[in-house]
Amino acid sequence: MTMVLKFLHFAALAFALGGGVANILLGRQIAGAEGAGKSVIMPLQRTLARISALSLLVLWITGIALVYAYYGGWAGLGIFFWTKFAIVVVLTINMGIAQHLMSHARKTGTPPPGAIKAMGLAGPVLLLVITALATAAFTF
Image (cartoon, rainbow, N blue to C red; front, top):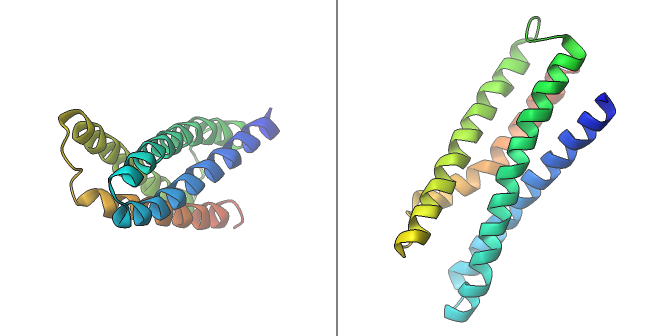
């Protein structure tokens, strides 16, 4: 069972990070695209954002399951783990707010706020920091 959990956890990490990086690259393409080009790229960005959000949910579920499978609960996890956990919470809030803002902009027919770009750039960076902290947490 733990092997399946680990696989799902790592696959979700790959999808979340890949989706975030792809969205950054698509954002650059949108900036230089004309009307028809934007209408093709924007739905793809939405799809990637949804895949990343779903991947984050899978990471939460499998991560909690792995903590219980290997450690029997939260006791005894060190500073690297708890720092990673705090950044995961920040990433989750960041992604939730970004999803809400994009949904609101789409429903109202207005452009998304400028903060979306920074929020999108933060996602992959936060995931890499989380991965580094997880590596340290489960190595030392």
